[in-house]
Length: 160
Image (tube, rainbow, N blue to C red; front, side):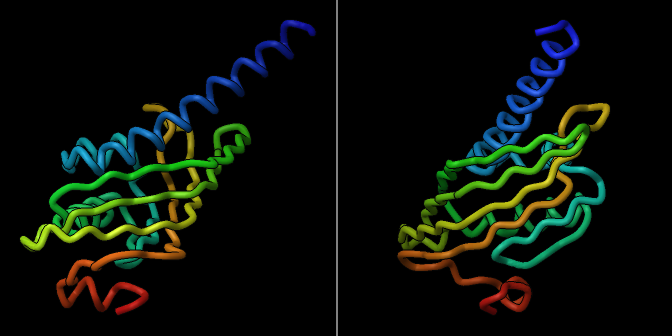
């Protein structure tokens, strides 16, 4: 193996590690609940598009608002990602995987709501590192009591 090939392989491995780490940190951040402008900049491009169970939004500020409002429906959560398939193509990457999310409702009932689905995420390399430019979570099954959505979120959700 020549030096150039070794550099390409090292770059591919470090990119894969950085992308995987970003996805893991993103899901963990949902459970930690510090959702502010710094959070939004750390994970998303300015023009990000996010397809969520509570609607599709465009732009980093809209994602921040929607995620804050969605996560406020829960007292505690645990988000897990697995079976991630990462593909790197220069300054772009895609990640396809599975997500299992456990939620304790914040309505005082302490009911548990679990959802599972498939994720598709597109990322771009920026001066600050990898950032999510588009993401979609498509829930394929749920169990338990779903949260009662406020009217505007219910109208935006596919089931609403």
